[in-house]
Image 1: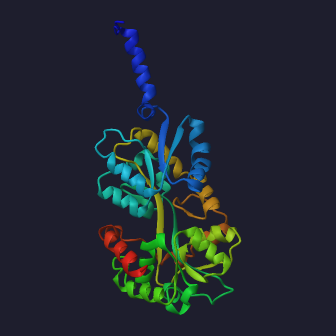
Image 2: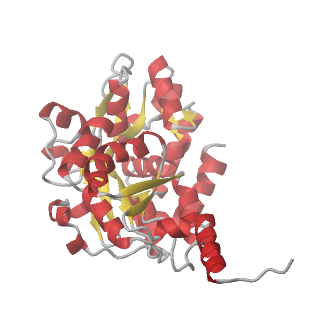
Image 3: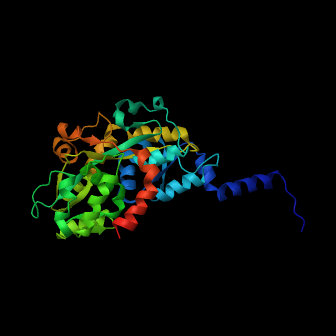
Length: 344
């Protein structure tokens, strides 16, 4: 049977194509914003503290693209040549934000479009991204099993034998801590390698994840290690016997933040989302729910909670930002050393 196309057929076909390409249509929706983020609690708390109270009432529809950071970074790279990407904002660590900027994948932000940015802590204001929450790498120890350590050198010490736990996925930060303990710096990890090897030979246990490390603390399999203070607060809330010490050698900072891909399909919506992220109520919610410090000066955290998650004025003087360029340039070599020399 002969088939002829008329205007009605063409319009119907166009509608069908639109249905068959939801990503394209969604990317052009007036109030839609697609957020690349980790799954689990972090994604849930983005909805609880930012999207549901601050954006949904204004008509925004926030869609999550949940994956770990590495596959999301790979997807950003794969979409580099596209005029329109698939996400409007991406949640990344400060190190990963730096990496994506170096590769030319993220927008240089116009802070005048975000009223809440006037309260942003200067150290969290990157040309290419915004710090959302931060914590510091501290010493963790069980007070029933050992005396209070003074810092990284006193913790990353062979004397602890198999009572020292080291988290595999925290590779870069273990190397930073060992470097600071051994006369190195955030720009020179080499002095710390000998210390880590000595700890490993003495029996230090390696755990594949933060959760496995926490379980070892809970059961008393280990007595000490290093981790983010915010995570320690979560574990304390879960009943694990653990105390923290801000290392005398310096407290490396961990910053989790957000960038906007250069080819984000809805940049104005992305700016609205980023601005809501900096609202004091949203920042206060993350302090309560996750134990991380706010990155805006007008967030009000209860004194008892601030004491647990934050740092004293003296400890703040020891906060150290990382050398992201050094880490990016040497990451492959460090990973090779970690797997073949340290773990082996």
